[in-house]
Amino acid sequence: MVATSEWKFTRRDVLKLGAVSMSALAIPRVMAAPAATGPVSPPVMAKVAMEVNGKPQALDLDTRTTLLDALREHMHLTGTKKGCDHGQCGACTVIVDGRRINSCLTLAVMHEGAKVTTIEGLGTPDKMHPMQAAFVKHDGYQCGYCTPGQICSAVAVLDEMERDIPSHVTGDLKAKAAVTRMEVRERMSGNICRCGAYSNIHDAIEEVAGGTA
Ligand code: FES
Ligand code: FES
Image 1 (cartoon, helix red, strand yellow):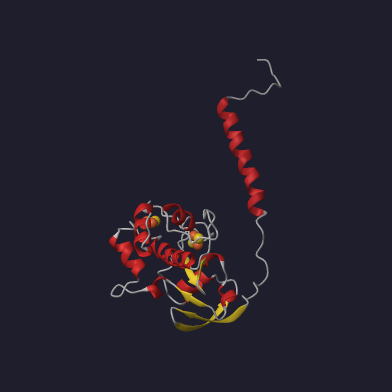
Image 2: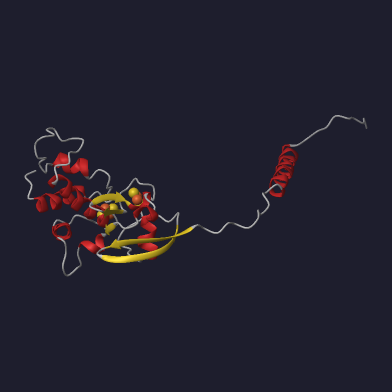
């Protein structure tokens, strides 16, 4: 028998060696996990007062609380929806001092003394706002998740047009903007409907506006 120093590996040996070396690599990573740091500083709190749907509200909030979370988690007004939480879908639209805003993109402490209207403040099932009634009549929703934001936005859109505020597609800045399909599409473009109920939403808005599109 001839002794030899030459190493011979089967495919199985190579696979086993690979598994062992991968485990060896993983161990230092686990050991290197960051150790727990010291005590976490308490949140900075602030008192915020605002009027929501005609009622005064006084809250003691972590200053990082968004208006959306203040409405939903602290005032339990869950009609306003959290969709993307990144200012991209419009589900969280509410009306603040007459202007629509994405409530997920603004801090509650920035609205001290403001007048906020949510979907609950526009109307009730027994006494609906004309825009709510028009959405029901024209079937302007399917799952309904985007609907509170759509309705708040639509109410604000008609108010903007009433006050002659132009949009990106308004042709004549001196003339009153007509409630055309193009105008409504442009002004409502920040409110996404995943169910695609857009044409019915437009019909509802057009009816309330008494438009001609
Ligand atoms: Fe605010 Fe989507 S939840 S824009
Ligand atoms: Fe479902 Fe608009 S009705 S997302």
